[in-house]
Length: 252
Ligand SMILES: Nc1ncnc2c1ncn2[C@@H]1O[C@H](COP(=O)(O)OP(=O)(O)O)[C@@H](O)[C@H]1O
Ligand SMILES: [Mg+2]
Image 1 (cartoon, rainbow, N blue to C red):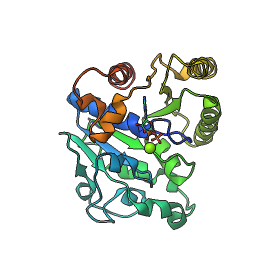
Image 2: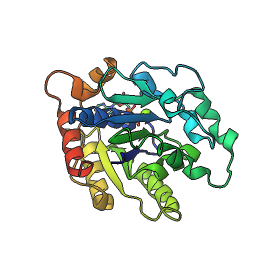
Image 3: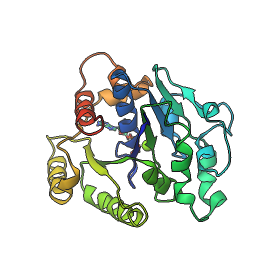
Image 4: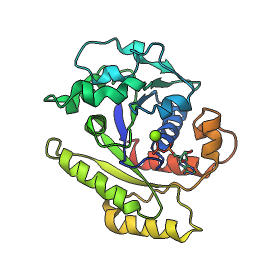
């Protein structure tokens, strides 16, 4: 069986992309799946989340964007969580656009290189930077599913509209883009949050599947411990919500 590739992207920063990747990864591992996390954000937030650094600067996800041979196992680091592996990001990624330029076909190089990992894992989760560019286009191309987290706040729809037009552009060469909107940091006590969720439902209802992730301070605790929220003791609302989202949408 080939791994299912799940891409997480949004043109806005701070909406919960990295948190979503780590949380989904932790839950899938608890369900018994082998999971590879791939950090392609030049800021390396997910790599820092697990307090990992590439063994050598050349052994990072930058290699996944190059049209030359590499040794897949050398890129993989192990997190503290059994069966949860990571390909780290590194600062070289910031130079990627300049290094690769806009050579023909460079939008699908990541997808081709991910083929080298699909038989070792059940799920591969890719965390994207918040800027529209070669990296994000590659991330969207690679995914069997694209998850777009949206923070339920004032002007949430603006960010979502940008992402929508990016997806439309990509559909010219990849007609089937299966994408979900995942509202995050929902706080039903605030008007802004409730109103934003209502707007998202109205405009993007087709891409919503009833799942919403609440504001949850346990997620911050999890990041301080470098663990997915699923691996913390005690009940967590967001854990339950991510779990619900996974069983309904990602695991078939
Ligand atoms: N559901 C949530 N409830 C509370 N805090 C959250 C939630 N999701 C994310 N956060 C926090 O918001 C901040 C930004 O999240 P992050 O996942 O890094 O966003 P992105 O990757 O989109 O930039 C982090 O400090 C994270 O811990
Ligand atoms: Mg991030």
